[in-house]
Length: 423
Image (cartoon, rainbow, N blue to C red; front, side, top):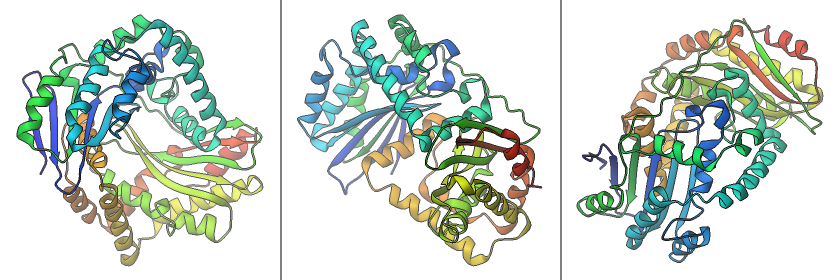
């Protein structure tokens, strides 16, 4: 059973003992990310994630950090999103103290050596090159740029080469102090441990989290009155596109209806768009529909890599399926199948200690409340035919449509006309 403990400092602990594993995962989450940045330091959260592993007072190099965890077969990494950063270690239960020691050491004692920062900038430049060279990945970056424009929600998490190049050691340290404080952090622990022993250990290792004024992020402004198109010209073997609509944030009760709509459209190989686009017509290798949900914005997007000569056809089919959800009620059998699919995928995704640590922790750091899988499944079960049709009519409007596309096209008007076929 999950236990939540808030320490005197304001640091929140989520403790989830698991008896059927030898593993333990320690995950430290911070409410920060690229949406907390300003333009001149865009990419600093991601840069900080990289450089925090570059050496501490006790472990002066990356190798010094790595060899201790490698020596016990541990897995470890970090990640940066638009609204959350995470640092985690997964080890055999016997090595919990080592995991806590290493993570607390990098969080509180990183050196941020200037020469290491300059070397890591080159690594990030190559990461940016990799993203821009991968159209399946990059088109989603363009999609969010189209939605949110010149505000933090529309910027790349990695930043640009120009902004990263100008980030200084002083910028890193200043940003770190603004983000990494007790009330802004969550420690999520899952695996084979006893709560009464784990809590004092965490208090000991993570007592250096200080108190400071929270780093605020600007509320994302959304303005749209007509379909929008962003074309990125590139000679590719196929056309990659993101087509979808603005929708709801993480706090909206409609998000469970939206999850079912997303699954109906493109959540599996037997979903409607997979059948219509891939299986019946052979237009694409991949076609999926998913949700992007943040604390203040959200969207539904269909991603596909399609035959360049038949891109218009693919777009029309996607729009037709959007329209179909507005005009025709889903059958009971399809609704049951989709609900079982969502609940089944949730269950299968929670097989390991690291999955549970992330499941609990990300809810807490983003929403400051946690739902169990059973509670989430109950909300899915409550969604009915009328809910799906009502929400579909609310979101699938041409004035909410957006299309980002990578391929050998320059005629923006051509695609704007296509989007106007949606009622």
